[in-house]
Length: 193
Image 1 (spheres, rainbow, N blue to C red):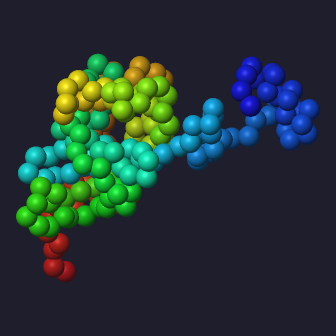
Image 2: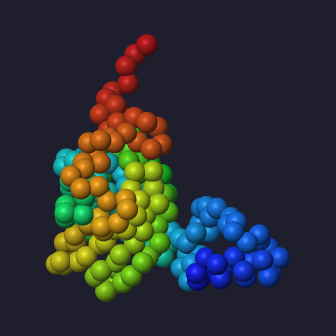
């Protein structure tokens, strides 16, 4: 139910499913059921390849739509980050943490820098602008992706309660949300005991 808090409380009391003045804590994907918009997952992977970058991945239509973000995400709304679209990935690609080996551009160390759920707020990727809310360990609140050219997008933090002017979240929080290791620790060769 949506509306003024007192009206929602009255509805819950009337329905017998709640007590006026008390609200159930919304967790997980239930919080994104507002207005019929279901939640998707997002992941940001730090990738130490030929060119160090972060991969922003959003679950859309059963795949991970992906952008390479050279400087990584920012919580400072004044920082506009270049985001270069790359090929879609399977959902399982967001699970990988370790070292890719091989002779392709996908080589190098990878950590899961952040992950969580997201929900669209306004626009669409097909239209070239999507505002969305992230609910991750490091990134939360509103963000937007805007196409500025055929292979160029801008990724920016929206001004809201989670915005932090002047912050450098990638330097402040370099560790993986999965293992706690940094990209350098994952890239380092295993040492013999």
